[in-house]
Length: 500
Image (cartoon, rainbow, N blue to C red):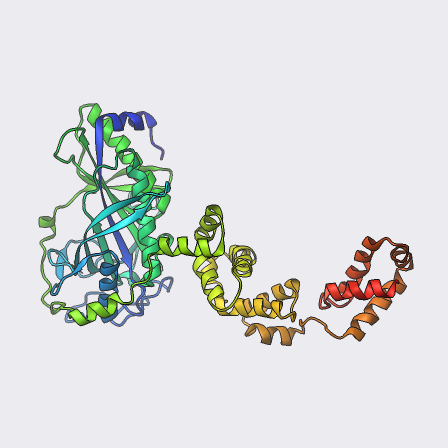
């Protein structure tokens, strides 16, 4: 399916008549070992319906038990967002009937969330910042996952079969809800993307989630409405659900602004509804948008209220790291790299790995060379994120150290890294087991030099005649004979000495 651009208003025309108002709801799956209310494993990618139990399947008589780590993660997220952590909060039942929720209700928080009234100062591309006010951050459980087969879009419309996987049911979620974002004007789509980007970076720095939007562990619902310029009352909003990439957040906001403006200009009425985002860059109707009354919220009777002590909150406050964008700016100055290089390192997910490698003793240049070139290429070959490679910053730093000590050449070091990736052990062990250490015995190197000169008398004669560049061919022959383990600089010295 494609969208008719005639149904959209030109972006400049939108801005001439309307003021966009945004509201962003970001759902974040926490990377706890177990689910929110039971002991089932919280791990992505397991066989369907293998990480379930009576609690997360909602079987009669089962009772939830709250995950303490999830609560602490929620508090840390609230603190990082400059929120007030309330002294008392509780869970509620959000009632709705859909196959992905086996209990026919979701345990969530409604009018008594754990964190309220915060803000995040979001860095924009031009170097300025935009303060996004946070309404609340609350705890809840995730739903199961439906897979629709037989339709062109992967959605239920046109599907012949629907499959349900309840592994995700009960996974800890934090929902972060902004206050209305007003006054952004033409920058509204950019600010939406920048906010979700900053939030992703912050959550990753807190180490509370892997924030993999491609795997659904971070999902954004974007609410958009338009009001005529000069009018105080907000327009009717739509909510585009489960937008799963940073670029798509920006595209979805821009599209809805243009679509709604076209409807209003034509004298129509914007329908309050949820909408689906399509990767082709447009949205389509989902269902009419419910209100809080539709969900019939009431307090969860099987869970006690949560009352974090002031001492716990302050202890968790001490764990909040430096804001990622401030950390990046500091690191950039220390390393002396350009904005472009820094963006590349962030985009490939290597910055934290490089910083950790430097912390283990490697130079920033060497660490960047390994992670930003050789290892990112290995990750692409394997179809994984560079952070998922089975090698640690400490091991990369150990390889750099072996090169700096002259025990490995760069070429041999790559073989050592390949051995570590293959699970053969620590770098020094791989070097020893594979026999990759640089040859330091001059007698062995001299013998290889003599053999190469004897095999190439014409080249030897050129060297003796003053054509020193010809020595490269002999050095190459020696390196080949020693399987790259000779010190090339030392080889050249011995070649030149033998030809004088």
